[in-house]
Amino acid sequence: METLSYRPWQRWAAWKRLLALSLPTGFFLALSGDGGLPFLLMAIPPAFYLFSTALAPILRSSFTVALEPEGIRVGSRLYPKERFSGVEGPLGLWTRWEVRPGRLNPYRLRLGWRLGTSPLFQLVFGEEKVPLWLDLPGWDLLLLHLGLDWKEHPGLREYLGSARGLAWLNGLLHPPAELEGAWEEARKRYRQVSAWAWAGIGCIGLGFLGPQAAGSSSPLALLFLALPFLGMLLLVYPLITAFNIGRGRPGWAVAYSPFGPLEERVQG
Image (cartoon, rainbow, N blue to C red; front, side, top):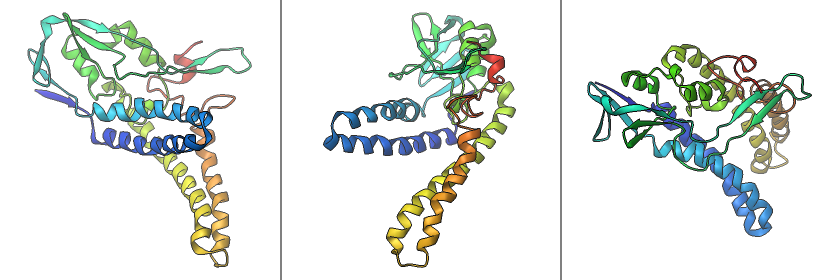
């Protein structure tokens, strides 16, 4: 019997997102007490993003599925194979890039805000339904165990072929088993780029806080003043190559999909 569960690095990534997104959300909420509505409105996007990408994954991180000869077991409940009738979904919108050849700006980011915790896909067993979480490692093996190849489901093909970006790289989506090798290489590259970005942010923060701690007359003051410029230089590479979401082609990380390049998979 095989049991599918979330990997420790996925849980750790969700907690890091929770910490990172709590800071701007809390900052804008604190300012809304004095500044009113504008700051409250600025707190809404990071709050929604925090809920869907951090809190929701943490809440379901203990979810497991046991693959048994008779079917699948979720908790103490067994769902027999003979009652499996298919997969429903996608049940809602999702964020994806569109390619529009011939336009002044051929790349368009179509946002799909999700305010609930319900999954995009569900397994149907008669009148009962079980969430099919696509960030659960081995979800494709679960489907095969029930007698369904994910490639045979139009909704799964459409979603997996068009969903792109950091969700694939930070644990919010997990690829089928046949694509894990190239996906692991992409995640390694993403971790390297993220390290450069965090180093740049650290230099900028130290450059602003250091002089206050050391004193303006300290010999280290000039060094601290140079750190923000170093930080900006360290940020240039990841911002342009990996996270570029301005005019022109999006950076490789925000356009990433294990199924192929942006132009090959998504057409507007």
